[in-house]
Length: 500
Image (tube, rainbow, N blue to C red; front, side, top):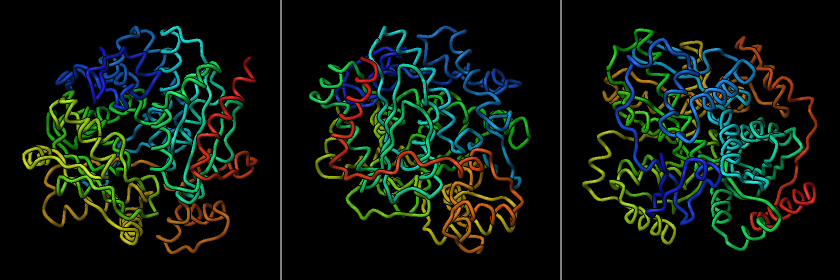
């Protein structure tokens, strides 16, 4: 399996794509020939999550042997990294709705699903490419990716990681997780700006010849832990495949029966992984893209116009506060019928004008599989309250957005099939929102709020958060977004000095 750029005919090996993240032309890597229709329930039944992962990833990372992939997967998905032996348990709300819980990893967010495996993939790719430079992972985060990447790569030999996050755009608990990160090879900085500012800067770094030449002179290669990297994106396919197997095994649907998924969406990687699962043979009928007030994606699926020239909102679901969704480019590649020239033109329009549009015919075609919806913060809190009081189930604000969009579709008579909501984070990562939603009152200390929520709900405090309060703050700095380049170069110098 080779990988190609979304913007040109450039082709590279899986190990090269893993190491470099972004294509040289600024595009994203996708499989050169996608493995369509290769999965069926018959081949997957009776398999554990790890075994399903071995099947799925064997189609993409063909540069590794079966035994190498198996070892990496077993090291990633075990009881050390995940609190539930099922890895992604399925929770049924009623006969028409199930929730896939993606938050049982070390950092309590769905980003753990890929970032538990990605360090093994990257380390193996580095060895395979005979790359002797130190790797510097540069990552932008809207909340969850940063902590998951930091935890995945902390003290991994030959790698270093630097994370940027918006100072006012993450929850108090997400901020605590990053500011108190352990590890000798990590660096974390807040910026005065939003996620799009951080992400756009890092994309420019990856294609900046001057900065890359400087890093290379210091013996350092840049890479990414954002879902622009195939090592982040492709492992996410596995939990959609696992969800299908669990739905059939539990009697929610019959073998081969179609179902819908609702995905709270910011950077479009999670929902794109589901689309890839469908292309591989999983019978997903509709993908419902759930947005908060930053509803650029929901609007696109309504109008066919992606317009990021709009007001940016800081919301109760901060991981979705994104206007420039990186993985959307990969989706456009398939909308365009793998026409890289068309994708390049669309991306140029987006960069120069802040807008791009598909044709009426293309919109009609993609709406056969995709639709969008959104709710605001007041509705998000109301959904959390409703689901907890009616079902005794506590949602985080991102999953509540998806649930709210599902409820609106059901009111409109659009929810005709069994539907799965992809639950992306543990609710305890967002104590102020949960306290507001359950009318518990807010406190200055987020850990005091967690105690209040736990006393009210009886939901135990996860060990990862219980231990966090007493850890020291290591990274409290906040910089202007214009200072990010110098911060990266300074970290390059520090890494070089340590390893020279």
